[in-house]
Length: 118
Length: 109
Image (cartoon, rainbow over all chains, first blue to last red; front, side, top):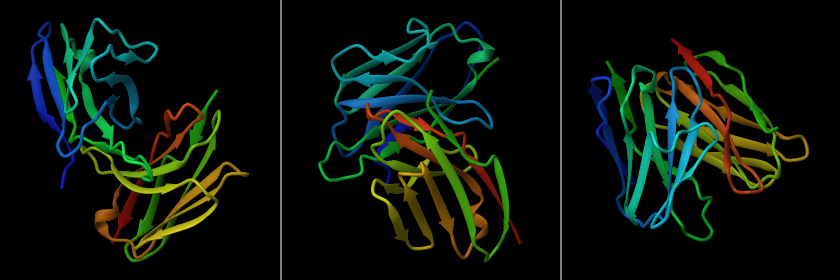
């Protein structure tokens, strides 16, 4: 079953509004979660690394004031796209890895959130 | 810079075998992953290689040669549901995942 859950799956909003996407780890505590963006027919692009209890680490070129990340607990990270514009329309995916020794440390992905800004 | 190369698209026939190659140049190496991603869905984990050799998991196998910076994903007895994108990703010396652009696999009856 799913170990990382993401909500909402689909969201359509008007230009200028803000949208919040939630990412939850269901059966483990994730001190670190990752937020990706994926445009059609392109690969995953890491936007930021979300650390529980501290500020997120943003990748170069990602505006931290536009993409607000909050990781308030060990099972929840949120991404808020502020003042969304049509160019922000994309597939946003969160992920986390189980912090267990001896495992590959593979990433478990949420279902993804498809954002369409009109 | 760091980069991962894999073919953009491949086509194969149902019931056949297909090999998807991945070459990488990264600063350090801490493992290579293969993920499957169906259209409109999030990726799902397929395999992990950190030592040279072949890892077999049912119809899917993954091979790694660290000296050559090369891996392949082998899919046997192809089924229509295997139509998807296959992503190769490498963990570098900082344990950051570097992603390939993905290979879109089209299965024909």
